[in-house]
Amino acid sequence: MVLAVLSLAAAATAQKDQDEPTAIVNFLILKDDNGKPVRNAAVIMHPVNSRGKQGRGGLELKTDLEGKSSYDGIPYGKLRVQVLAQGFQTYGEDFEVNRPKMQFTIKLKRPQGQYSIYDDHAKDSNAPAKQESPPEKKSDKPN
Image (tube, rainbow, N blue to C red; front, top):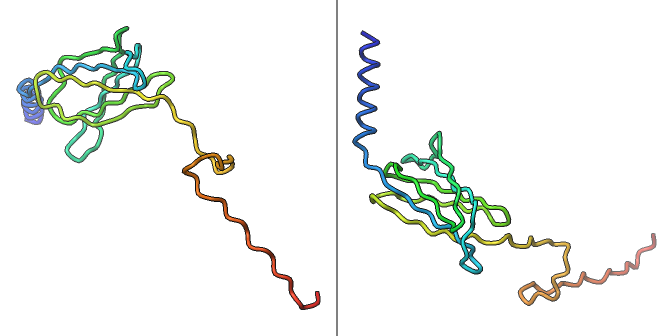
């Protein structure tokens, strides 16, 4: 009896998977500064549930010489996409897959310099003016 229920549940799950619509997703990965394609970038996709949690499993694609990659069979719903490429900032965003064919163009930025409180920012026009410390008061009391 238990075996029959389990096999029925498995069949229902398989049927549900076959009935769910899927999409072809196409990615074009470009350099933000000049619009040239980024080759060999990793495009990582994960399903996202209704609570915003990333699902188990996932898929990794690599871009070709023209910065393109595609996959046929992505189920409709929220899809978390991360793009990693050497020499660029990691990109991440959630997309809603809701059409049979979807195109995503992603522009990768170069890493930005880090701000340090130890650097001299006097040359920076947006930096706040340096404050002088107040002069020490001399006390009339003997030590």
